Amino acid sequence: IKQNGERDLNFKALQLPDGFLNPLDKYWSILQLKVLPSGKILALSERILLRLNSDGCVDDSFKINFDVSYPMAQGFAVQSTGKIIVARCFGPDRNIVRLNENGDEDFSFKAIEDIFFLHRDRFIYGPKIIIDENDYIYYANQKYVVKLQPNGSIDGSFRTQNLPIGEQITSILRTPSKKILVGNYYGSPTLVQLNSDGTFDTNFNSKIVGGIKTMIVRTNGKVLVAYDAGIGSHKVNLAEIDSQGNIEKIVASFESTLNQPTIGWDFGGFYGFGNASLIELADKKIAAAAGFSSVNGLPQSHLALLSPEYKPVVTFKPDLSKIPRYSIMAATSAGIYLGGSQVQYPDRGIFWWDVLFGLEQ
Image (cartoon, rainbow, N blue to C red):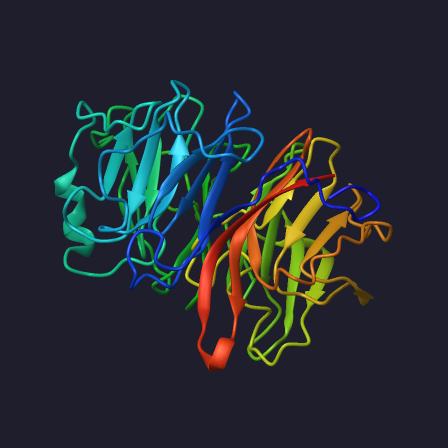
């Protein structure tokens, strides 16, 4: 979206209709986006992983040779080599796979069957996966965090943890001090922190009680956490926290007029389906996408832009009235990309299809 609210029509919006792969598949949403150094875009839904060219057209040279829909793919990360680590939500078979840059499966990647006793025969909502600067892999499922070496084998120096939280990890990140921050939506505590060896950080004692929606680390090292303001609330707060988990300041509040207990699963994912609905842009502004209708009391729907000091950019008024739900974002210096689910109600039926929009700042 340009500063005057116009859409960038040079980007081809991707739309996968109902039954794109299977006539019975009517529930679709983009779960994750990532802009690659080449300018191409990886887009993951529950049913397919695509690579798009910078103009939004599908890159036909990228072809995966395994089924992402079962076990259902729920997240990915890219190593420095360009290889793609895909996390899936069913156990125990091949919950993590690695793809080469062209989409072929990399069978040199270790099968890590021995860690999946942790959730064997259980449905795992939205496993999370991040990669550090040395290509080590951190995998989090409902209650566990595991560290893998770049080739997929378990890193025995990291203590695999059964976290004392509820059963839904919504976000994980590495802090500037190389610790692992884990956000939880259900239960208590909602935030825990692990040391670099996987042990619990006993100095971390977060007082946030609302479910964690998503988290990011800003380029200035500040950790931003989006969390429910309270049970039955229609508000999500955005706060900076310190290294002990204390709220330093609440920097923004997003509210919804929808009759929902929160502003919706589309802010970071109710089941943790994606954790990129909050992102810092190259000019240090913060973009947020979710089902809100106001920011800090000012009318603003779906997509908001905050200044580096967290003041709403009131001149940013994109016309997104035809796109009721989306949240997953990626960004480059050229603009913002959004992906999500569009919903219509013909004859009271609910039909979803994938939508990916390229938006210019």
